[in-house]
Image (cartoon, rainbow over all chains, first blue to last red; front, side, top):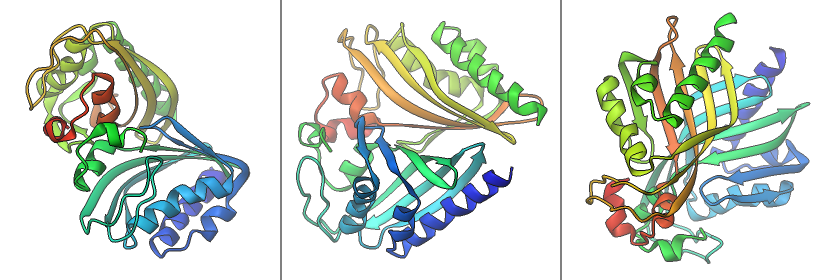
Length: 149
Length: 151
């Protein structure tokens, strides 16, 4: 149970720091071979630099982005967080299909993020959300363009 | 603590019943006034009938749809399940933008569902997360302006 409390505390902390544009703490907690699985696209990124870049991309596209936690549960080595990400698209959003220039549009997306911890380090993150919601909010209507996002 | 194992078992049972096509069996696992939210749209369904309507639409469109659990945790009164839904589009898929006739395409979608379970072992609230973009693409729908109404 002690680990569950620690994992929960650390997970909450990385989101709080993300909201303050500080991703260094998050990066320092990633295991060397940590992965993020972006479930909508089946994309897996490996290693602290690539994992943290995934989150930096959102901060770049939405400089005012905030994570608002709705529900959180720590269970064994897993912390599950349901949150709403809100932000304004005032920066360039890098995506695998290319950069999406700022549109000034607001986005609001429910996300379920599952973080696996081991010995105080994050080994894996699984990110569930709806790409269609995000794309529509940015005014992108062609899934052929968006499919690699 | 004893309930955690039982809650996980009940959740697994509910998904297995869906895979077997026993939708009534699945919704009987929900409390009468349960709330089910489809997170992509934020649409909320109240009670067993509405929930059956939502999940039934998938089973009608994809009669062979099977749910394969990849991860499941149960702590306190919450069960969180990650699963992959696989099926073939052999029936009409009802959407707010209109019905999508069978395409015979195979789909595979990753989902995550959080369940709150009461002391009677009934689900009181469900939050279902998945990506509608990949589902639409697999059905050959590529225009989000059309598809946005069905999220």
